[in-house]
Length: 144
Image (cartoon, rainbow, N blue to C red; front, side, top):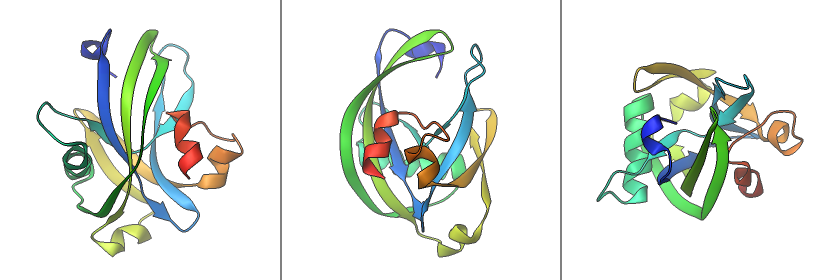
């Protein structure tokens, strides 16, 4: 979350991608509290862009991968605090699959968001449902 998003609503498009009993996520950390948490891959919807186009573009930009079977699951609001900033997102939550089926055999997928590199990894859904790990927005758990 960048300073430019303070005091305004940020529309995002993210996707659940499943591999058996796991989902693809990446880890983040709050710079202030040092709490670690996970997020689904996706990102901001640009002006004039449909949410389904945004989720597809974000996977292409961040992971260099194409999606297929993209379906909207839910739309909801998420209000939270990150790095001592109050944030407000409108979340378009999708389910999708990778076009390239060999991706599901990878333990981690190298990604880049702006200048920040990250590893997208497969985590058991049960870890989030049983609250062993935190996923944000927390509403995602209702759709796993």
